[in-house]
Image (cartoon, rainbow, N blue to C red; front, side, top):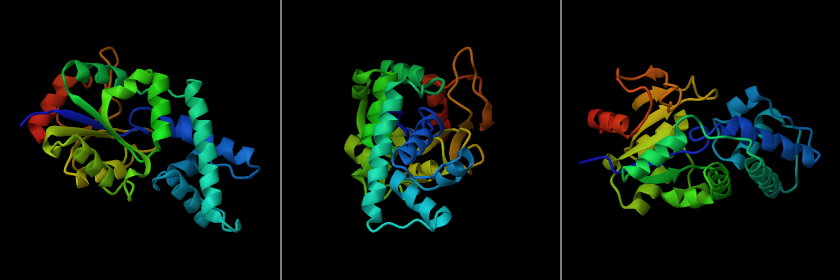
Length: 253
């Protein structure tokens, strides 16, 4: 048994896309459509407990905007989300959202070491393409053997469907992989697929519960900018590289 593959969540894990991308895009879409809705950073923190942009809008209407009605709510919400996605892609093209510390380095090191890479996310394929292409270059999309995104599965995180789907497409056992997540919903999803998970928190998820995480860090770190260990066993590692992943794998997988 050995470590063969790394499977990454996207939003909040690879980049702070929620705060700097999705939230901005939602508010710009509302404004463009003439809606008087404004989501604050604090409100969005709560809305993130709901996975999927369209479901998030419906939750907002049900809890915070009960007076709003529409004859065809499903299609109206879908149109809002479509415009929001278009705006999000534009923000990515403008370079509004960089990758988090250590992400690009770890991708390079993992590829050099022969580890397989995949993505498991509930965001849309368009959003994944926009982030990867505008931070790493369009050719980097080929680094990922499988990109599981959007509605390829019936149930979004915290259901484990997306991880099960990715594992099946890769034809690999979960015991040979490590998942990377940033949220409670994410680790519940990965754990449902019997994956061991490394957590890097962000401002929205630093108070989440992460039962069964191998380790909880503030980010992946760099050689000159070490990570902060929030929870986990002591280590000589100061940033997440392939050697550290093998150390974690030996302990937990």
